Image 1 (cartoon, helix red, strand yellow):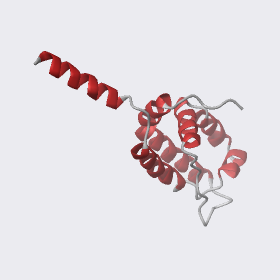
Image 2 (image 1 turned 180 degrees about the horizontal axis):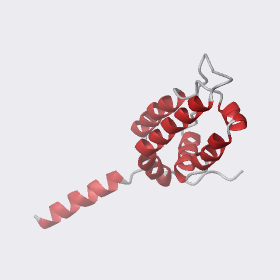
Image 3 (image 1 turned 90 degrees about the vertical axis):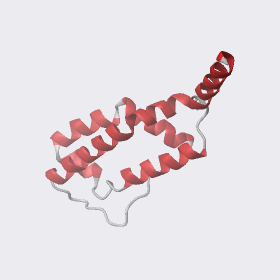
Image 4 (image 1 turned 30 degrees about the vertical axis):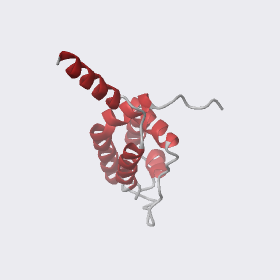
Length: 126
């Protein structure tokens, strides 16, 4: 009986660390869609025009979660889709609000993205 329980637990542990598959890809696609909804402002303009935004944006884009997300997107060959309408002259408040929304998405999905990135095979050398 103990062996059956141990084998069952080992089987579950193996499944939990298995290589990412299609279910993971589908989840990443949904996460990317959530980030795409934030793309309605010109981030480059926010970065150029608003110093407060710029430093916080750099911190966010260089975070371990952002790096994990980049690795996962590259693995699945996924890219952001540009929205039809973009505000090319967003206010400081609009820029900072969008940044806060991005931080919230990272907080929501960060652990998952980092765990998924850790399961990926090594990236090919350039």
